[in-house]
Length: 194
Image 1 (cartoon, rainbow, N blue to C red):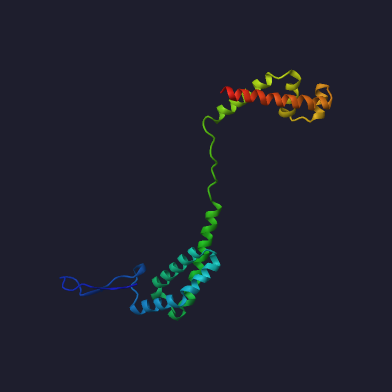
Image 2 (spheres, rainbow, N blue to C red):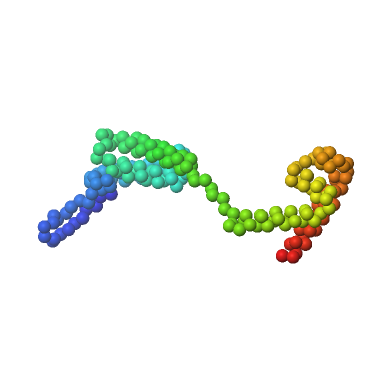
């Protein structure tokens, strides 16, 4: 709002001068009083309006504050100052629309979430685990190794494994069970050695 600066007794300066208001326009004291009255009588209603439009009370208060500043800045250009409430309401609605557009753009252009990248040694560890499992597989009896490879690496059913190895389905189950148990033992021993 405007204030009067009194500079008395300074040579070459006027005795009083007016500080320019918001936007470089010097509104009259009458305009300041009208804006103040407008603010006190309509601020809550405008915040409610903006809150309903935006669904965010904090942004709504900012929009209303900016709208009052805009009305103050353009007060001298209002054709009918009696319609200031309508102008203020229109300003709140327009600024709310702008805030919603800005929010929409921000939501559409959110950068993708970057997942934590695996450590530099992750590939080495995976290769070591794979080598450990392959080494343990080599220590299994031939039939158990064949059943486990066909079951877990080729994802064959028991019937397909039985057909491929020319053994019964019961034998497939038996070899798979024994081979899995022995493989767990071999891997546990390897972990203990490290």
